[in-house]
Amino acid sequence: MGVLSGIRVLEFEAIGPGPFGAMLLADMGADVLRVDRPLPPEDLGIRMAGKRIDISGRGRRSVTIDLKQPASAGVLLELVERADVVIEGFRPGTMERLGLGPDEALERNPKLVYGRMTGWGQTGPLAARAGHDLNYIALSGVLSGIGRANGAPVPPLNLVGDYGGGGMLLALGVVAALLNVARGGKGQVVDAAMTEGAAQLGAIIWGLLASGNWTEARGANLLDGGAPWYDSYRTRDGHYMAVGAVEARFYAELLDKLGLAGAQLPKQHDRAGWPVLREAFAAAFASRTRDEWCTAFADSDACVAPVLKFSEAPAHPHHRARGSFVEVEGVVQPAPAPRFSATPSEIRGPKPQRGEGGSSALREWGFDDRAIDCMKAQGLGFVA
Image (cartoon, rainbow, N blue to C red; front, side, top):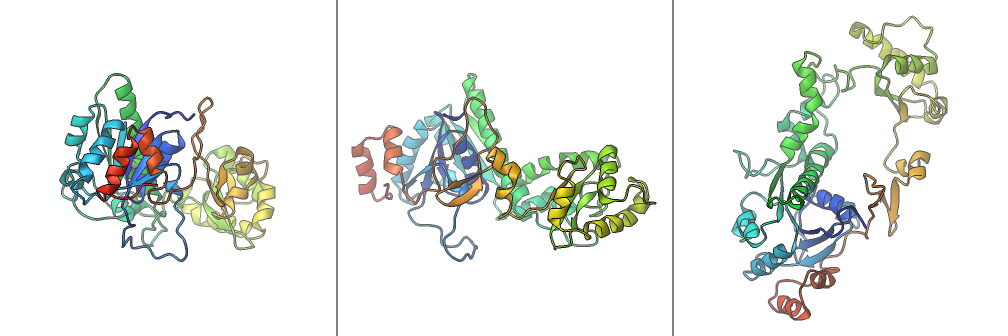
């Protein structure tokens, strides 16, 4: 039984951060029922070969309901009455036009936590504009600090906006609002915007900037690859080792393991000498393979680790020892995190097909067979 066991979440189909936030809640034991369209969206702008495997859709059941049908609002409000949480990721105003906005929902269920996931937020000049992760983190200021010196900013996959600044922020807000309800408070809206979440992830940088310890030139700072002792280096076999030897004692151990302890090198924090240090480190790492360096640093506190590929990471001995990755129906994926000592999280199956598990979920949520048959007769969708 997960820490959120007994919590019912009504999730409206979306892509990116909303499903990721719902996945986190599902892993922790929440009963997540996703409202899918009867047919998949026609244009997600993604061209993929073969079957798309959506790990962030794991752990819930699905009911298909056509939101364009006039009768759908009534059925969905009945689901809202039975839910503890609603998660939606439409543009601002969409749920209101469907008759499913926060006012209607909270009137039917005053203790409801209504989670809204967008890029720009529910208000402001850009609220109605389209966008994606890269646009949101660009406006937040964070993207400007990611990339090599004298080069363009580099997209950090879609992890800073969609997931770190989006889905995780949403999940935290939902859990905090649920705690408030459990303490006797009222239900409320959680407005999670990826621009603001990404900005929060950059809090340390604003502090460094304010204190004069950060220059806005990319690749010239401690954490952006500017410092030679906080970067990645190519090995003889074309792989990379990541170095994070920030503290003096760890830096000294780095020099020792690289065979540079007695060399005449600039001091660690002598910025004018950083190019010399980088050249020395690059030459040292290029002299051995990645596996040889892993052996050399195996029992070291020099803060050096191999840069593993996605396909390699699950097989690392540390991950194997902790069970950090699991396999669900043949698909290797990250295990639930964080870990709870008394109420462990678990994955309750892969992403459902449209409508899969819908009938059983509706029965558990208080709908009888007659009500379910009525939904089907109204042409709202299909539930299996």
